[in-house]
Length: 392
Image (cartoon, rainbow, N blue to C red):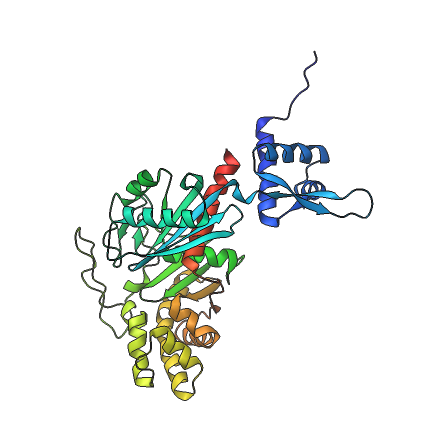
């Protein structure tokens, strides 16, 4: 019997990946559309779809009417072929979202920490509750990404230190993976917000940008060449320590086991939510939270304008320092203070930066809907899950 040469395995894998990536990015397509958009012949496209159907990854989801002949079958990725979990961990609560392979959220649950610091118990409880809410078995999660404040060591994957999460220490990463029986990724929360911004927000398609997070804490995410820049120790973007005129230097910042480093001084003391709330009082916004004060100022008259000018000047000290080193295409303001200011604040920051350095950056407010850190965690987990599917 004559043996016909088969398609090499590597080529089959390349074709399968190309078709699956296309369906994930574009939604349902016909066999002909997949062939046209990937360059595959009709026969090869049919064989590719058959293999993906056998693997339980795609299915016929409808029909597309044509000009002549029978309607063409529309193929789409089966949403339940894989699930992921994203977590946004804070000092008071943990929010967990479960998403299908298409990125659609099937459950979102927030649980209180109740003063407990054990990361394994907190994460386990949060993930299990979210899975139950979404009727998804824990064993079906193909990616878990946890967003936390603080510095994450890129070598060990552990939180090196965090003011808000004293219980997260060396060994937590391994303990979490052991408890959940699957790989777990811990990532800095502002970095995850930048991932969401580049995928679905104001930085779509921008390869070089920075995201300044202004909330209870202050942080910066740096994206260069389309990739997050974490630095050797994971400390890139710890802009709260930045020395600025008019305030004391941050002192005694060395991390010591059992003791959190101090951050009294530096840029943090000028633009954190606490500092912004204090700044707002003389302008008539006493008693407001930082975000509420900024929103009220945007809608107010002269007093509101003067307050926004002073806030923009403070923010510009940090933005200008970053711009003269990196000269990014875009600066995105995020966090509750950044979002509250909107265009009224971003315009002022642009002007203030241009007055103190030779670069006038484009400054915009975040466009990510909902919780940016949580969305970034889901997107990062989807990248992991899809890569596993592609390479399996």
